[in-house]
Length: 84
Image 1: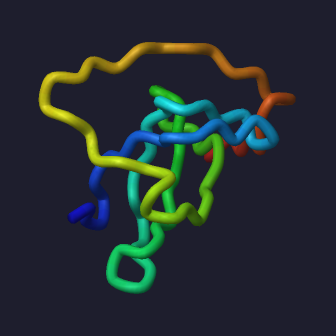
Image 2: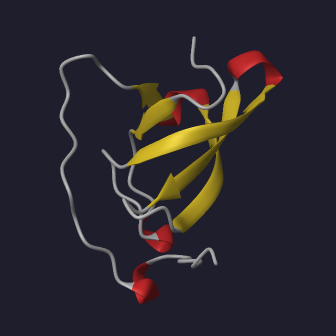
């Protein structure tokens, strides 16, 4: 079961928000006993890119033998919010 503050992997593309399957987010709230999650997606420097409510089948837990991969986003590609 996915827990609050756990890292999760996005399983679907959300191009309208600049997010792609495989992007890593952090669960910040759990809805209906795990039926859905509020997930924050951030840059490696800690800037919030997006926060979205997602269904349980749209994310998955991180697997033990996975490695992160970096890609650059443009501010126009997402709801990029610079946290000050």
